[in-house]
Image 1 (cartoon, rainbow, N blue to C red):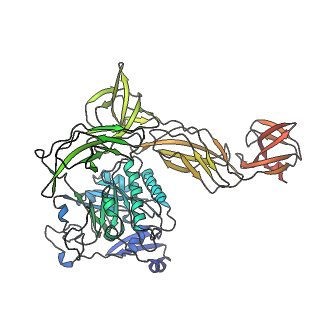
Image 2: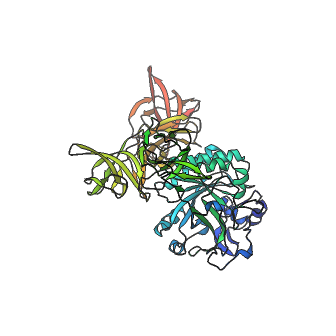
Image 3: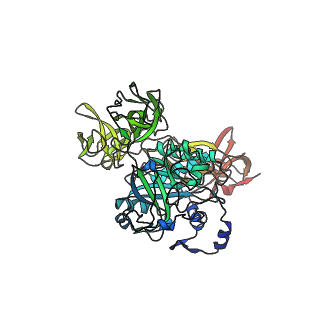
Amino acid sequence: MGVTLERRKYAGLKAALLGAALFILAFAGTVHAQEADWDDPDYVKMMNRAEEETVDSNQASSSSDANPYTGYTYTHASSLASADIVYGVDVSKWQADIDWDAVKADGIDFAIIRIGYSTISSGTLSEDPYFEQNLKEAKEAGVAVGIYYFSQATTLAEAKAEANYTLELLGDETLTCPVVFDWETASGYRNENVSGSKATSICQTFCDIVEAAGYTSMIYANYSDLTTWLDTDTLAASYKIWIARYNTTTWTAKDTSDWDYSWIYSYWQYSSSGSVDGISGDVDCNFYYDTTYGITNSALVDTVTGVKVKANSSTSELTISFSALSDVEGYEIWRSSAYDGTYKKIKTLTGSTSYTNTGRTEGREYYYKVRAYITVDGVKVYGNFSDITYAYTAKLNSYKVVTTKADAHVRLHAGSYKTLVTVAKGTALSVQAITSDADGVRWYRVKTTVDGETVSGYINSKYATVKVKQVTSVKAAKVTAKTITLSWKAQGGVTGYLIYRSDSRNGTYKKVGKVAAGTTTWKNSGLKTYTRYYYKIRAYSRVNGKNTYGSYSSIATLGTTKTSYKAKTTSSVTLRQYAGTSYKRLTTIPGSKTVQVYYRTKDKSGKTWYYVKTTINGKVYKGYVSGSYIKKT
């Protein structure tokens, strides 16, 4: 993520450097050959490194305590003293090509990879061109991966768009580390005037959408913003925190203790000038703190029993309930998107034994466990976790998967569990929910009938393909003089929808839009008045890096609106069902006949036609006539 940028202007430096088409970015003894991009906030950070690494040179050490990537010795907060510390990096296109095998061999165990960013000038959603390459090669090298999106959002709607765009780019990729919302602001940035309260809401909006999609979210911000700008107490209660602080500690000299925050962070970006094998030049370096579940003493605290999870009528809610225990202070509810995956604490309850978990994804299975706690000498002591209980959210649209291998096993849980039944290649299975195993691989909870007995279990997505249906009910939800908003019927099990448009019914269709699953509307702006356009849509499912497409919808003929006008035919002309001489003849309109013109369109050869209405011998006709025979009155 480059360098933590305080609120200061970069206009002078920008003006001095704009004349060059190719820059050598030289800082801290590092050289990167890349094109200048003043619309990329990461680039601006690198060119305007406002916060130097304020480390004491006396702390540089050759001892075993010295950090292998910076040479400095770092002091960790006492609150994290029991955590296992994992080394990692974060990268973007500004690191260019990376040798991930060398990175892994140098002791780096995780990487947070930039998936995209919003431009400074307009907030345009942009993909990092190295994202797919870095994600693929880092995984292949055995490096745990997460991703980050560099925001420039100024409204909740823009934060929502950034989150949905991130999920769209991510597809069905599995991650070990979180999906990060990179929140930073500075003079010259698009979001420089956003208040702290609005920024907090923006962070929440992005993270809630990511969490609902089944990923762990995290907020990245610098020390200053986390301690004086954002409502970090509120954010840290629901999401992981990643602090950027280029020093050998995360606190300042004026702090009275080594830990004066009321919240804990999970990641610390401690340097922007680390040296790691396999990465040319400087790179951001990070610590991840792998904390334990705390102190457990089953002799002092009983185990919670009677845990139940029930899907509500809402497709985004699950309610967890359990039996009350006596002599405990409260309960913690933990959730995972995999039966034997990583569990995250989502709620602490006092005085209650039920909780409704909102914001979940339609048709996804979630896993919960609960534990009780008491406080002994100021330290929380926990009972053992309850048994894992799980349920899936209700879904609006059922769908099926088709097995692709004859030995496809339906198992008791997602992973290497007991085989309940083996199904033959080509078997269609009804999907009840989506889940994943501990490695993040997608599994389907399915139902099938074998020898008259109904069996429910789980099948690996590697052995089954979603049967993507044809999109139906494509229509105009709203039209204006220069916009058309399309809508269509939602499908289950798809990753998203692709929208295609043509200027003529049988012309060449080009992809003009793409939306993620859960969205069934799309606004086409910048259109011409009085004009008809032709649309078709198809759904797709992306699993294991491969897209499966449904067939195209029927063509939807839609036009922009504006008051119709009167015209006359210049000579006798044929009225046809569609634009083009090969279509059905409806009637012949005589010359000098008044017609009402509603739209213009084109035929396959690019010639203009008009959609008109006229009355001949007392009968009303509607259809298309060649533009060569129409003159506005």
